[in-house]
Every structure is written in structure tokens, then in C-alpha cells.
Image 1 (cartoon, rainbow, N blue to C red):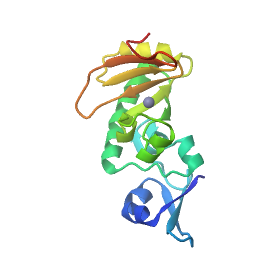
Image 2: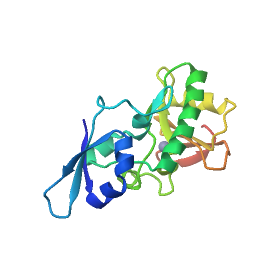
Image 3: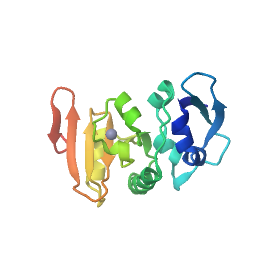
Image 4: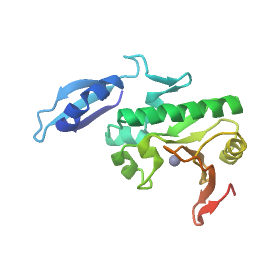
Length: 190
Ligand SMILES: [Zn+2]
């Protein structure tokens, strides 16, 4: 049950979103500067379901956020983007006939900075997911998705460890890239 503390002014501004997304307001700390304490309770509320197999929680969950006490809270626009992303992941799930594991989808600017993400990362807009599928290597998964009739913007095989699948507000370039230590980005799925 992760607990985070955020500045009271942020908490005040986002109170509706905070409650909608399953966080419970525990109160303000007595500390100077004014911090609100929030707790996420996995069991308390019914999870907000974006699509039959993806919840908002798993699209915003982050081990780094929990460790650093970052409230990784998307705005309504970003939640809408995550819904679109989840619909795309449903198509991948149906095609590979296996659950799709999401290791990172939405990242608030603070979380993106903490994980060393690109400054213009689609993760920050709720439009990218890093995924794996049991029984497939990341390379096999990337090749499978590339072979699907799927309107994505970018598909990146990252460090042979996961697949980054990104949408865009308007573009569907179906760009294929590989990134490895040492060589950086190369075109295609190498
Ligand atoms: Zn990614």
C-alpha cells in the first residue's frame, strides 16, 4: 500500500483526480511547507478499468514512483490517451494470445526525470507503454507487432529487454527502431 506526500497546493488542485484514481487522502502533515499524505489502497476501491484487461492502476504504477514517493497522476487528457493505448494493447494481447505485461506506461514529468526518460517522451502524455509477453523474447514480440495491421507511431526494441510501443495524437508513422548500449538508435528491428 504505497504512501506518498505531495505539496498541499498540488493536492488541492488535483483532489478530484486523486480520489477518482483510487488514492485516499490521509491528511496534511504538520511539517512546514505543507504536505498532504496520500495512500493508494489496491483493495479498497474497484480498480478503474480502461479496457477489459488493463486498469488505470497498472498503466500508472511504477516501482520507481513508489520508491521515491512520487504521485504519478495523469490528467484527464492523459487518462484518455492511456485508454487509447490500452485499446492498442488489447489488440496486441489478442494477436499474441497471451497477457501483455506493462512495466511502465504513464510517467509524470517528475517520474520521467527520475527514470532518465527522453525529455519529449510519449510516456509523459500517456501514449507509450514498455511491454513484455511471457514466452516471447522482446525481439520476437517487436517483430510480431510490426507484422500486425496496427496503427502505432513508434515501436522500439529497447536493450533487448522490452518493447516500447508508442502512439501519437495524430501521427501513425509505424516507425521501427532498435536501441542498444553502445550503438544507440538504429533503424528497423535489428
Ligand atoms: Zn518506453
